[in-house]
Structures are given as C-alpha cells and as structure tokens.
Length: 350
Image (cartoon, rainbow, N blue to C red; front, side, top):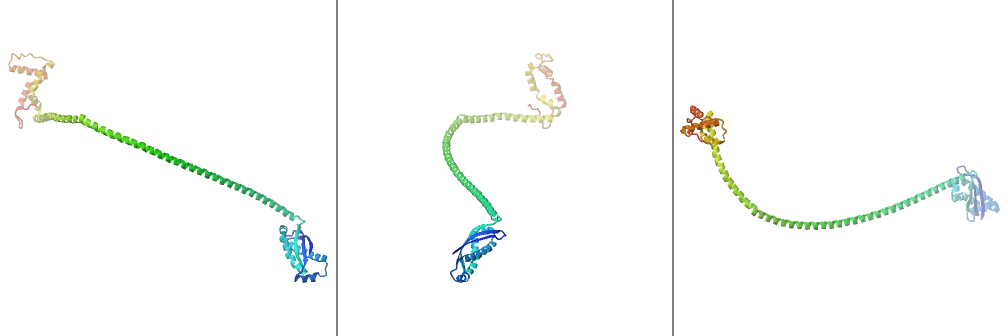
C-alpha cells in the first residue's frame, strides 16, 4: 500500500470560486485480472517514488475535475459525497495504470477570497437564527403546553365545581321537594281537620237553624199567619163596608151630575132647593159660632108658624147672603118645578 498526500491550490469550483483542497489517498497495485496486466504493462521497471508520483498526479487531476463540477457549499458541506465523487472519477484512470484506490479522505478545504468563511458565518448566523427560532419555538411550545395544561386544569376544576354545584343544587332541590311534601301533607292534614271541624260545626248550626225555624214557626210565623188571615178578613170586611157605600155614593154622584147637566143654567138653584132643608139644619146648629153683622128682632114665639118661618128665612139671608124666597120665586117663574122627560117628580137628596 502507498499513502499519497494530495493538494490542489486555487482550483476553481462550480461558480468560479477558487478552492484549496488537501486530502490523503491510500492506493495499491492491482493483483487481480484484468487490472494486473495493466500494472505489469505500466509499472514494471518503475520505482516506488515514481509510482506514487504518477498516482498523485492522476488523483490531483481527478480532484480538480470533481471540484469544477461542485459548488463550494457542496464541497464544504458534504465531504463524504465529495470523496465518493472523487473515487468514482479516479477509478477508471487508476485501473488503466494497474492501481486500486482503497480509501480517500478530505482533510481540509479553504479559499483565499474568504468565501467559505462567509458561508460559515452565514451558516453560523442561520444556525444561530435557527437556534433562537428553535429556542423561541421551544419556549412558545412550552408556554402553550403550560397554558394548555393550565387550561385543562382550570377546566377540570371548573367541571369539578360544576359537578359539586349540581350535586348541591340537586340536594337542595330534593330537600325542598321533601320539605314541600311535608308542608303539603301538614297543610292537607290541617285543612282536613279544619274541614271536618267546619262540617261538624255546619251540622250543629243546621240543627240550630232547624230548631230556630221551628221555634219561629211556632212563636212568630204561625201567630203572624193567623193574624194576617184575620187582618185580611177584617180588611175585606172593612173594604166591603167602604166599597158598597162608595159605590152607592158614586152612583148618586153620577145621577146628580146627569141631573145637573139636564137642568142647564138652573142646576145650581135646583141643587140648593133640594138641599135647603139640610142646609137649614146645619145653619141652625152652627148659629152660635156665626159672627153677627145685622140683627133683626122678630117675636117668633108670639107669632104663627108662618111668622117663625119668615123670621128664620130672614135670619138665613142675613147670615149666608142667600135669599130663599127670591130663589123659590125664581124657580117657580122658570118652571123648574115642572116635570121633564125622564125626570122624577121629586128631586132626590144626595
């Protein structure tokens, strides 16, 4: 085996950035067909130093070719992929020389323009940023988890409180229902006893009412009914005594009105003539109460009956202002005393 140190300076990578790459390769002379024939043909008669130099130049050429196909970021970020690409690139060339590449390790990658440093700083900044972001996300997630845990805890506490409140409410409701039932039962019992007492009192009062009604019937109603019947009978008798004369009087007044109407203008004189005797009796009975304006002295005891009548007529005239003689003569002159059709011979007194 031969260990060969490789170094390429300012080899341009993809994008035009010059890179310096240092690596170590482990190679050996092929011992298997058909590569061994190439080794005999190419390396027979050469010293070890000449073989190492030939392998070094070949690998450095392959290294420059691989760098030209990769960006500095690819070369720097994935050295394993870079070494793998270099192995694949150098395998065919080394087989032609009768050599076999066992291993290849990239030891250092650098540049003179500071590109990789800027990439490093950028990556470092990105890493720092990502780290801060990750830390912030971690803190946020922690805060969120803590908030969620607190929320869950609060919810559980609230649910527990709600459950306790519901249980307490149900207990109070049950107690209220039980108390209500007890109160209702007590009230129903009180009402039942009150109803029974009232019914008993009503029965007693009904009996008292019956007794009072019977007593009233015996003491008041029956005597009152008897008195009422007696009063009705008496009233009927009194009414008959009043009605019958009233009917007769009404009939007389009716006939008097008819006679008065038939007498015409002399109705007053005829009526006075018929009532003359009654008026004279009344006047005689009331003479002591009459105020006397004129007194005519007639010796009635010494005279005859005609003289007494004349004296009375004169006294009647002076007292009442009615001239009986003139009235009689007036009636005689007008034929009042003559009989008319449908009239009685002598006027009735009413």
